[in-house]
Amino acid sequence: MSEHDRSQTDFQEFLGLLRAELSDVTNEIVTEIKRSIPEYDRPDPAYDQTLRLCAEILLPTFLDRISDPDASTDQRDETCRALGRFEAIEGRSLDHLQAAARIAFHVAWRRTAVLAERAQVPTFVVSAAVDAMLVYLEESVAQARLGYQQATGHADLRRREERRRLLHLILQRPAVVPEAIEDLAKSTGWWPLPAEATLVAVHPEAPCTRSALDTDILTDFDSAEPCLLVPGPLTADRRNMLRAALPDASCVLGLTLPLERAAHSLRWARRVLDLAEEGIIPDGSLIPCEDHLMTMWLLSDPPLVEELTRRHLEPLQDVSDGQRKRLVETLTESVTTRATAVDIGERLKIHPQTVRYRLRQLEGYLGDSLENPDARFSLDATLRAASLYRRRRARRGQPGVR
View 1 (tube, rainbow, N blue to C red):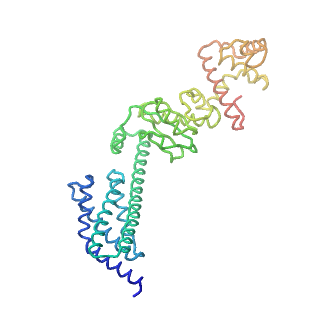
View 2: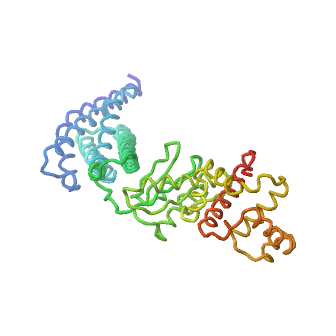
View 3: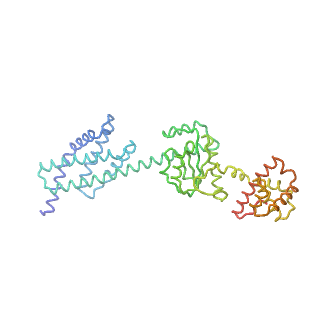
């Protein structure tokens, strides 16, 4: 018999001795793990059965593996992944499982050393067996880690989907009964219903660092119109949090409203986001919706703006386009700013006397309407809206309101 054949024979005989010890080693491993790790020493018999079953699977498959390197590891891998998933479901880290694996190794190593000394097994055989144990341990922990990651990933997906459902329910129109929202919030086990909420509209292509968001923020970044809900008002800390999560994102901070009116907060925030995208207002991150409420209102009904403009400026319909443009420009400055002829002249870069002359012309065309408070207010709002509307149409390459 060659030296190699003799070595293989010695090795296989030693594995036979180890197999005979499996039952006792299993009992010792289970006992030692429960003694050393209190989390696994519970009155629930399921814990003891799980430990014992895993040891009864992993120890024989280890011997099969070193006896035949081509032997399948499917059973071992699935067992270890199941252990990892179990730890995730129990809400623990992998620390306890890794500690249990180390305990199992040391118990097996001690029993191997005792058995080798008693049977006078050659040193190289024992060394090969211990090296194989270390490799097997490392591979088993890697599979447990994979199962753990899969379970936590699924849990994160479930939580994220629950949050999206809750957000959609809050924003649903027509509104659902409050009890339905309360029931879903309770089922999540983590989200107390706030009295107020602030919605944030986010551009679809905007980057977001989700890890920077507080854990109570409801988000939907998967829809065509991403948004998030911040419980309560936007405190300084909340603003800093949003600034960290959306530093370069085009987004609008909605109004803080009672939770049952949260859909309005988002609707208005999205309108302001559209205005920023059109260039009507400056674009940027964390645009306050409250700073642009009047602009949003004035542009809420373009056909109405056209009709109001036509009615207010109907007396100028027979004036040439050039003169009409100059008179409307002067009228807008006068009505919206209530400035003096000198100030208006500086803004329009014309002589104050020219301003006075145009204002006298306008009085002749418009009559007493400029002195009537209601008519003046309507004219003021209309001219402001028409100016914004012209800016919007100009950016679109369309003719504006005359």
